[in-house]
Image (cartoon, rainbow, N blue to C red; front, side):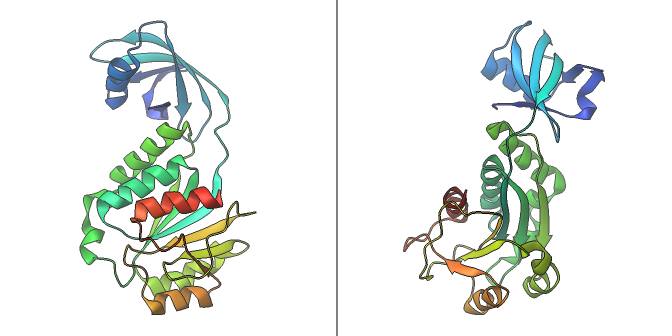
Amino acid sequence: MNLILVEEADFVAEARVRLTDRRLVHVRKVHRASVGDELRVGLVDGAIGRGRVLRLDREQLELEVSFSEAPPPALDITLVVALPRPPSMRKVLQQATAMGVKRFVFLHCARTEKSYWTASALEPDAIRRDLLLGLEQARDTALPSVVFARRFAAFLADSWGSMARGRLALVAHPDAAAPCPRDAAGPAILVIGPEGGFIPKEVEQLERAGARRVTLGPRILRVETATVALLARLG
């Protein structure tokens, strides 16, 4: 935890927060802080600053906080991912958030297991926890948005046009001829399929919608690995 994220509900006075959850445990056991120490803090969807420890014991952590710094700039890439296994989805959320992604779309495709849609990892509280973990890692405060699209064709018909307008649109696919570009200039939308890849019909639909097929090479990577590799090239 490189940043102690606080929320409006944590405030007990104008510049004082009280924490009693995993953040308390982390500060005690990892930071090994003491009264008077200063920690890096951030306000969710707000600024970054410092928190001075006023009280720290097994029951609670109280900090006197001030905020003065803007969070790091966002990575202007909309990430569209065919809904993977729940453990992979959690890794995608955490790692892509740490890299600066602010807009996620998880998409149903032909090779998506229907059971994935009922996983507890898709519940709002679980998603928020993963996003916060990514923000804490990267010392960021701006919470991303997460959208789910359960119909592939409907997503392309209803949402793709406005989402991709003015953006470089790329679909990662193992058999593409062109390599993924490096340091894309301007905003982009990146589409990543399941580990088995999109079926040919889906790739054709994405290409007709304006997406360009690109590859990372001949190796077949896990979704979370491909996500990090592609974002690193484009960013």
